[in-house]
Length: 253
Length: 320
Image 1 (cartoon, rainbow over the protein chains, first blue to last red):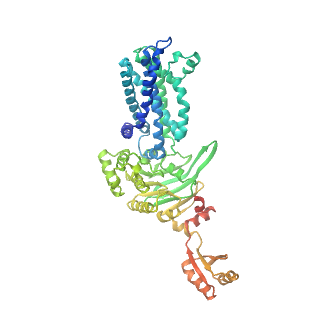
Image 2 (image 1 turned 90 degrees about the horizontal axis):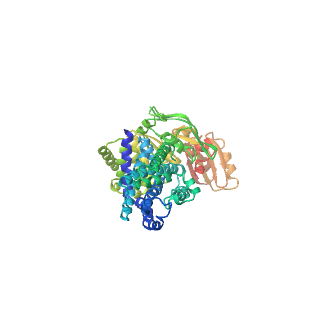
């Protein structure tokens, strides 16, 4: 009960903070929208190539961008978080009787709500550019994006608590982000890739999220990629949140 | 009544494979109603101890209770009893003082109307009304500190823990904070604070523990600690002739109230009992011998002398 009340309290607080200075939310949307406007048209000529998945260029590209939004947008929550750590805000909260679980969940809830907002705008822009996807599939994709956001946000917080330094976090992000994005088949589908890349991508959990979203966008609810995507993202999101809760419980310098 | 009690509280960290003992065993009692100071140089283990006492850090060994509640098995209950102001402060810069205080009140379970009322009360008490609705990132160091203190007092804690409360404060804000801490204490709040300022420990704390290298080296009231240092110091600046030193030494040697005498080319330093009484006698003796005294200085033992005696180092030097 107390956890619920505290989570709600912190969620409202963090949401107010974000709304007061929504720069990060807008910046986070900028990259996927530029990709949509400037890169999606480049895919059109190859959309009929053998090996290109069903759904047309924009129908294949948009679900990939949703996943990209979930990864990049959620990674950048850590910068505000580290500034907060440094100012002692989290430490002050940890000395109050606030539920330890709420300290993490309040934040994650805010991150997920902002991510859903961004994702909705992104799909809206894609729709204006001619996307015609299965509405129920799009809604289920949003659920995948939520799980993905939970996973990435909570891992980011846990890593930030270990590193406690913006520069170190920025280097780690730069190191990880490009291979993750390329091996998820977000920009160009992995069905076009040579076998060895497909094999490497097989262990990249984000590739499962992309495949599941793509299947959902064209209404293939019984495609095995769908349940696989939900299972992989669900399990990892749970583990991620667990890790973050543990890290928040333990020391914060 | 004891409000805070620790027994052999210790914390070690593993840093790059090496075991670092930050706190090696701290045993102390803080009585309800006092201002208790934890004085020591940087790196002595003050902040680590503070972090254990505020439930932020689990100790490697030892015990601690606050108001009789075990700090580590009942952390949540302890958190309701203590207020904490860290060195960093911890106010949300993008929020106003009022918003910070209302939210903090909510953290302690106050209803929204109660939290609003309490915030209003604190803003008035700590003279923050003028700036209450400006983002706290725009505050001066002193204003910020007032907000930090208000945040620690939202739930009227029995025990207020202050970590280096006046570090990096301007003299005016420092004086204000001392007054405020005394006022809170007079109203019944027990205060436990760390500091590396000798004058602060001396002026503010009713009792203090000197900590060095992870251990308490000595504990007591500032006066009792200073009384351990034998005697006051008198420094006489003289118009010096080559034989003056020996001459004066011969003159003063028989006086039983003088413990020791040293001299160099500018001055004679004496350690004496009851300096205020000894000084006129000494001046008369020297005057009778026609030695011309230019300057006189009488100094009571300071906490730095206590620290020096206990650790062999000066706290002033350690701080730099």
